[in-house]
Length: 286
Image (cartoon, rainbow, N blue to C red; front, side, top):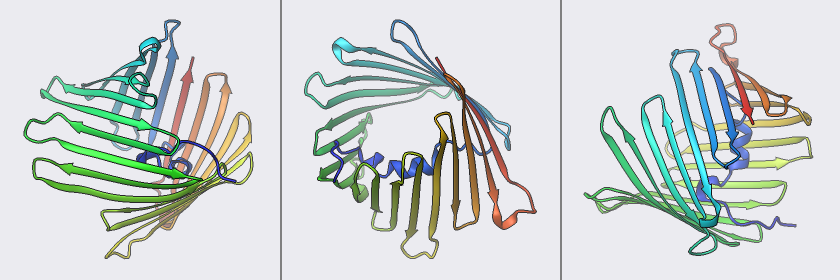
């Protein structure tokens, strides 16, 4: 039996498998994330991390305010690279499933600034996304579409450089999704091939497989990952690839709104040489 749902965006195809390999791992970082929401509906998100190898510290602050009556969302971000980011979005007002947005960024030190118009539309059987940057000499136009039918998903993504009048991206994807199983395959520019499988074996165990290779190269990448829910407050993660890199992670909910993440990356080919990475992250939410 297929799982009835609207198709995801092209960039979200295969996300379930990617999350198995990405979420909960913070190799080489000491990280702190804080989220809170005021009584007036303003959401605050702060994040900071320190790289154990380079010693570089990075932080960011994001505020988000939703005006539900008008379908309006205002988002502002700032980071320690001194870059300001603003997005104004309107959703489901002109048409059900339609989202219009404008985002802009500004770096005061360098004077660099950019802007982008974004359009997205979603329906039971189709998801379309497009964006265009503000460039008077010729904008870069990105567009993607995903069609869904009885669990089957087919997507196409392209980018058109209007200044040079040529396509710079030509990607295809095909997949199949049910409630407990997701298969995803993709071809990027006819040169890079990838595939992934996500399987929810039971309420406690999720597994994922990733495979990729490039034409004209013998460099094939393969990975196997799993997440096991020990109980409602704790989870174990593990992954391994064909380069003998082993990632292990542990997630523990200390109390409501406080979650601790511990992770390590072990280089199996050079186990005695050291250079293995550890990561610690603390997530606070109120």
